[in-house]
Image 1 (cartoon, each protein chain N blue to C red):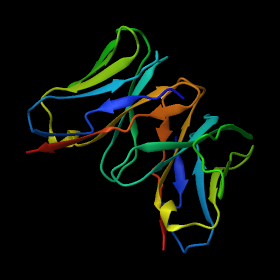
Image 2 (image 1 turned 45 degrees about the vertical axis):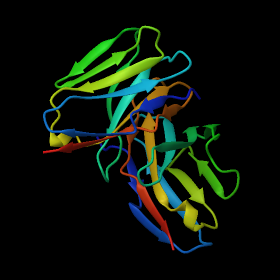
Image 3 (image 1 turned 60 degrees about the vertical axis):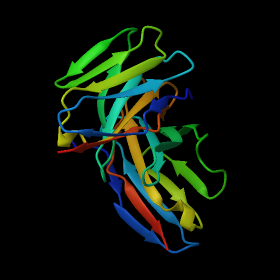
Length: 113
Length: 108
């Protein structure tokens, strides 16, 4: 029973490029969360999705960031025209319907050069 | 979402000492979850508390949920170097909202 899978584990992008981060939830989990974490800081909520629906995107920057969780395939966090300030660890978590424990992937470390 | 505040932000103890982190909210929480993140790792679920006044134990870890369901604590007895990491509380309501965490450093 595979856990939450995130890829890539590490991603380097030049300023202005696009970054695509993928998250495959645990089998049977219909809820996906994305979080951003800067070094020595906490987990900042970005977006909460269910299959084909964005439930809460209040933590997502209004520009350049988007997320989806299609009927088939992984959830995608997309960052367009990356800037140095986007460098961070991005974690995905999945769960059954709330309130339930969330299981985290190992994260994608994005570095913008 | 409901905000949860954690204190202290950092704690440095000698191996064998006890450690406690606190999680507080200004509003009543439906439940509280605790996670641990090792340095360089990802958050791992520890426990969920739902009932008022609930106390749960996992070996040297004791978790409490306040009577008013506005606060929670995690107590570690006789810390070990393997306890090093950041402990987060989270409120699972509409979305999963995390506190800023308490980073624990244990010196041998």
